[in-house]
Length: 181
Figure 1: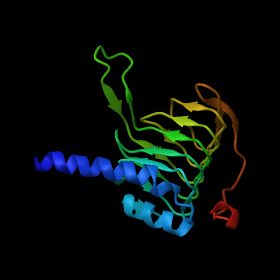
Figure 2 (figure 1 turned 45 degrees about the horizontal axis):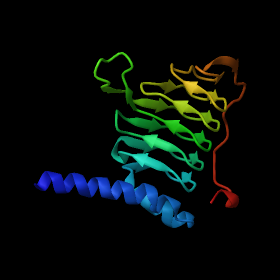
Figure 3 (figure 1 turned 180 degrees about the vertical axis):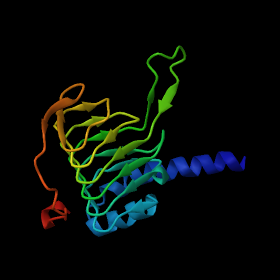
Figure 4 (figure 1 turned 90 degrees about the horizontal axis):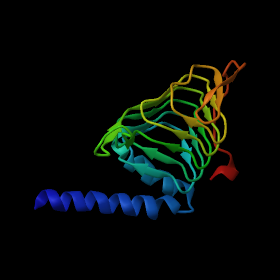
């Protein structure tokens, strides 16, 4: 009985958090709740309205990260680790849990996702479970990442493949602009 009540309360909180709190138009209030929902959010990291978090205790976000509108961060199937100075554009889905297409009973399978420092993920990207995106990599808009992405590479397509190399010393530090709130 107590377990059922606890499960209900957790589910209810997740619903309220993702459906109401994440659409609060006041940046500082929204970030207050994000920092309470996640175990670790680095300094000067920011998220726009519409961020959806699934099992936040498995998600960590580094310093100076920018998370745009309507991004989904899933921590149900493993850890989701986002490094420092990571730019995640709008409508990106990062999954740690999916169904096993080869399973006769449609069971799920999970895997941790690691996004290293200075990664730029463009809009409408889907990242599947068990992926590591190397330092300084860029993922082009609309890509579906099904395999690890090497450091300093530019990937694009479905499935994402290396289409170029990034030539940057990665000296920048992301920070939010007034329009980002």
